[in-house]
Length: 276
Image (tube, rainbow, N blue to C red):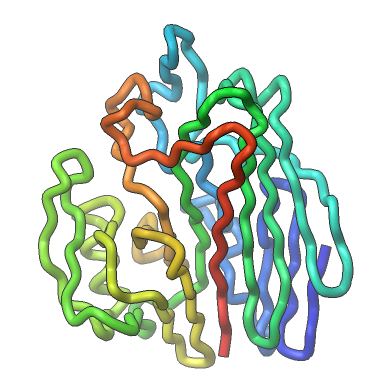
């Protein structure tokens, strides 16, 4: 599947409902998942953001297996709309998802182009009779050069960076312009750099030939991750929650920051990627 205008070419797949490439002036700005350090591209994190160390959890006395980041990244979605302007894909709860997450849900992801911008929208509906707990985030990877590129934040001279998701301890970090090579050092120290809620609503990855601007004002947190400085990509991840669930037996316990969706309600959220 493809969306294309005179500025951008976006290629999509029903596998996880992901973007496979985003071309701007002949360059793919997205990491394509073919490197030796990470096979992902831009997964959706639902209904959990990370995963228990045991890859299973107990809910209401029943043990469920679950993989890292949940369900969507491993699923085959159905394309329910495809035209020149928009593509929408869907995953409905089925026998396989219920074995991992005992709630009946409907997940949709939609893509559309507006000039030099990609708008990505999500709709998660609770089709169950009971309240549905979940966390939600996104995990897009962007091609970069750690020695040359930088991040620019539109607000906040300083920000609080989480050093321990369990205790919520944090340190103060200067923002403004931030060299990617410095981020790699912080990621090596903290595994993932997670910013507490920022005044910033956009984050820019500034490269030699183009700038990628992410507008994620509907998301509460920002996380940044890369496996190492040789990977050639940086994941810039808007999250709705912080869940340090690796050492828990129930990622849907009250001690975690969860969304609770009532029966029949829909959770809607979106963000955009602009390239110029």
